[in-house]
Length: 71
Image 1 (cartoon, rainbow, N blue to C red):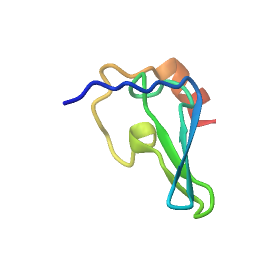
Image 2: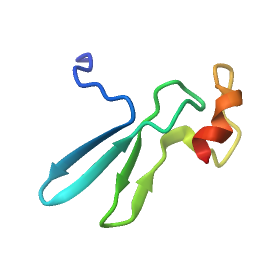
Image 3: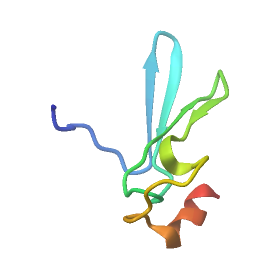
Image 4: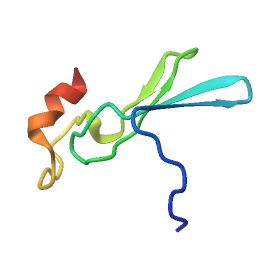
């Protein structure tokens, strides 16, 4: 696996094939570095494990920050 070599603190915009791709760090939740991917033209958002549909491992979650991140 290649270590990451691009960093951002809140938002990074990418353009690929005429499509805008927004990478967003909204805050800590279940993990400390989740990225939300938003495609504004298509109005599609990929939240990863920021939003859970069932019980998952929460042993290292940042509960005190999670609600703020969701807001």
